[in-house]
Image: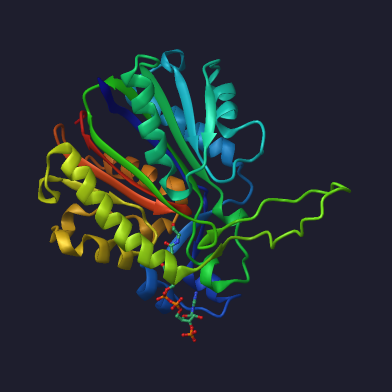
Length: 320
Ligand code: UT7
């Protein structure tokens, strides 16, 4: 017994920042950003709290599933930066929903949702849970150096959620890391301990774009092969690909060898940029709400990110 996706939700900040908006204060252009990445705009937090977006998306997912918060046995949140170091975002969501079930955050960078899904599978398969709420929320705009054109044009903020219920739906899952502490790095605050002799690193996301690009193309291709083999499927059997939305060139290059029909590959990168852990979740919800998926469709979610982490999950869609 594993899980199926019973409901999904998402919430994005109101403020939309276009490439032209960025070109007003950065040495960049819409043409460079679109041709190198596929990104045209992104949503950015202004007055909203990330917690509020996470709670909103969770409530939408519960409504979509026709579920009451009392049915939830576990809350998992994928995030790199909750509003507070403690309490966790998962506890804040639990408070807003009025639950007292175990709740914790998980940081696997852009692969966070897939890691949460695999933990949910473990809890459900061993009988510890019947319904798991997975939430993802990222405030990337608060991690970036907005004077660094090589990173700040790439990311956006947002939140998403799904309710996973015990049943048949998950067909296979594959997670891995290729540990690398430099390729994508966001230092933590050093604080003001009079005993600390560690120097404060620059408090902004740093990235070796070329290195991540190479890793991403290889990892996504390998994860797709492995997860399909685990499910006894071929890449051609998959109805919908939901890849992490970091760069359309990475998506094209990693899927090229499988000769997948491009209409099966779902994208929201042009409108949302890279929302780290919450990219695949928001993508899933947006296409679910459009009515793209039908009962029995096979969905393959695949992602890579800081760590360096990667993973893929195949789900059979249960709702119409
Ligand atoms: O979720 C995981 C997180 N990260 C990723 O997935 C990122 C993976 N990497 C990438 O997507 C690509 O490597 C980037 C989009 C980050 C960069 O694309 P690229 O084609 O690898 O460009 P590049 O870094 O080789 O830079 C080419 C040029 C450089 O100028 P010079 O040295 O050739 O004169 C950069 O300084 O483009 C310049 N450049 C820019 N120009 C205009 C870098 N950023 C910008 C910019 N606007 N925003």
